[in-house]
Amino acid sequence: MSQSSEASGESSIDQTEEPQAIDDIRRSQHWPPSSLYVVATPIGNRHDISSRALQVLQAVDLIAAEDTRHSSVLTGHFTIDTPMIACHDHNEAAACKTVLERLATGQCVALISDAGTPLISDPGYRIVKTVRENGYQVVPVPGACALICALSASGLPTDRFSFEGFLPAKSEARQKRLQSLADAYRTLVFYEAPHRIVATLQAMELAFGGGREAVFARELTKRYETIMDGTLAQLAERVAADRNQQRGEMVILVRGAGADEEEKSALEQEAERVLKILLADLPAKQAATLAVQLTGLKKNYLYQRAIELSSQS
Ligand code: SAM
Image 1 (cartoon, rainbow, N blue to C red):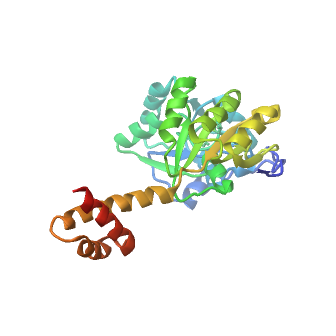
Image 2: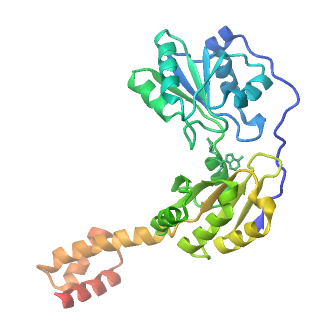
């Protein structure tokens, strides 16, 4: 089990940035009218906001924010004075109406959440869906996202992964969900809250087996950033024993059950289907020879399987 060093970057910067004139910003990039900009903000380190995101937040007519007080700290830091409205799970319908009214008059609106990419375990789905249904453009302004940040540094396979978000809070439902993922071949990525982390790692150990490789990524981009890898049994024990590891924001990544297994079983099923058709008219040896050309699998394997299938019929 290894652990990265702590403290990768402070979550504050010293100098404020001069806002660019809105007309300059609008001239400097493609700026379609009546558009909703979905803008990613940092997940800890303020330096992780892109200059395009800052330009967009400055130049739009309105910002729809998950929590206006929280986001005012960020916009204040960058001396962005665009008016803001709240847009969270409990007022999304009303916020949606306001946004549509603004877009109807040719204005542009930015959507932001408290941290990271809006809609990723954050509000905004309804607004984006409605805005698109009403024929307006939705423009993504990419940036930080905890799941991608964690995955990129995890050392686990990234060619195929699934984001599982937060698990159900109730233990029975959580165990059921985990059990349904136990045979998945892809890397699994979960968000978790600090007060549930110990129980969740133990539940994962139960569902996936203590030997399954995993990564625990905590406080990414912040002072106490920690990226720990090991088996689920090791991680569960280590986090349970150290209260500091139960603090802050966290992502859990679990290696899949084995991509090779799944691919192998799909090929074997195909070989079986082909052999059964051929064996209806041909002896095992000829069926196996043709099956090699049809499936690309090894002749020895196909011949052996053809003999087994013939003896079963
Ligand atoms: N929209 C955000 C994103 O793009 O990642 C996610 C918002 S969700 C409400 C918050 C969860 O994301 C946290 O409970 C944690 O699981 C994860 N998270 C956010 N920031 C993080 C960070 N700096 N380090 C580790 N996990 C983080």
